Amino acid sequence: MKRVLYGVIASLVLLCGGGACTPESVQPQPEFYVKANKDGTAWLVPGSGVYDKAQREFYVFGAQSDGSAIQAYLRLGFTVPSEQPLVTVVQSPTTLSSIPATWTALLGGDVLVDGYTADSLSGTQLLITRLDTIQKVVEGTFNTALRRDAPWSQQGEMIRFTEGSFRVRYQ
Image (cartoon, rainbow, N blue to C red; front, side):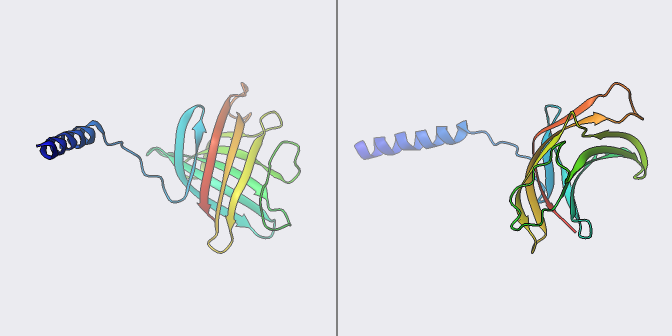
């Protein structure tokens, strides 16, 4: 009798416990991405990279498209140091090897309609956590604050990207 009672209780616990869980809707993350909190809101877009071998400059792009004719791009860049392995690159306003981060909005893919750039007051921190030169993949983290460019506004509005990370394949 005790065996049957324990079996019934165990079945009820499993049945009730399984029903208490609700499935979470997890949005799949692309294999190659750029993500951050953009002005406090989660931001995740497809990512890509370009390495300019002649200049030893590396660029990471995050492309945002909302279905309209306007597309926006976040560009992070750094100069590859000569020592290997590449462990850390810190980009700040005082580093001569840094390439300013930018946010560019294009209409139809070729008409510039808005832009933001990191300046001396709103630097960028960039940490490279993995560089695979065989698979041509780079990963890292970043924080940046970008000020709106003068042609678009005299107010100096800011866009802030915090807790950013990326994984991109480069060419």
